[in-house]
Amino acid sequence: AASLPIGSIADWVGAKRMLVLIFVWRAVCFAALAFVGDVAGLVLVASAQAAAQQSASPITQALVGSVMDDRTRTRTMAQIRSLRNAGFSIGALAAAPLIVSDHLWLNRSLLIGTGAAFLAGGLILCLVTVPETEPEVEARRPFAGLRAVADWRYLAMAGANGVLAMHLTLLTVGLPLYVAADPDVSDGFVSVLLFVNTVTVIFAQVPFSKGVTGASRARSALWRAAASLAGCCAVLAAGGRLDGAVAAIAVVFLACLLLTCGELWQAVGAWELSYVLAPERSRSAYLTVFNLGRSAQESVGPILIGAFVLTAGDIGWLVLGVLFVLGALGATTAAKRIESRKRAHESVSVGAADS
Image (cartoon, one colour):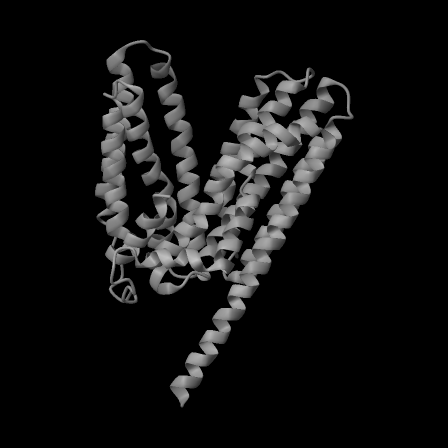
């Protein structure tokens, strides 16, 4: 809920200013977490941090779009995601020995250090130059962009993309529980799968973004994502009928690779579609609305995969595969409707100008 007004304010004050504020906000939250000593304080500070975290991605996308041109916008987002995954991996390794320690100030230093990193990131962000030729922001009030929620076509596209974004839950919930339920595969193999996924994203996200410019190619990327994710589900469904450790390991490894390919294609397709189809003068608000689909799957996805898919077995995996295809169908259909409406508005504007 907090990300919507934050996205609207970003259209009012500018994406760069809002993003710098979010970095500082997160720095303060992490520093505060180091000294929280009760549940109520933890919930309050962690929620404030989560609100900023959820808002950061769409506003970053809006800023990248204002700085880069159409040919390099999605590629730049891919580079950012690759670097983020690299930083995530390095941070996880560095934090591991501190987390297992009982030393109070070692644990506090982990949180304070994270806050300092966000503060440094905000200072670096101040060096980014935004072109002065950017269109004048339409929002004359801080929350004017909230009316983006009323655009049902864009909301439908966001919701359908959220279905495709369930690959996140599939990786962190579905695959680990699948491995845990298979006696032929060690639980430790989950770490191998996560490592393979992370390394593949680091090195392959940029190549996967090549050529994905414009709504048409973005829709194709979403269809490729759906095919890969549905293939992952089919492999997991078939894996339940195979015996032996070698076959079981091959199944989950292949499923992980297909899932990762789906993740890479879904990311670039969603970046491009959400940006090019958002109104230019309230882009941050619309991108924040689009991010709601991904946020929704973070709540619904674990319940769906944990309570239904894994319980239903082969049928559950096949149903999930069909859901991924329906997600691509819904997102691309909504995108076409938005494109048609934009063309109609442009034709009316041109006609009015000519007359």
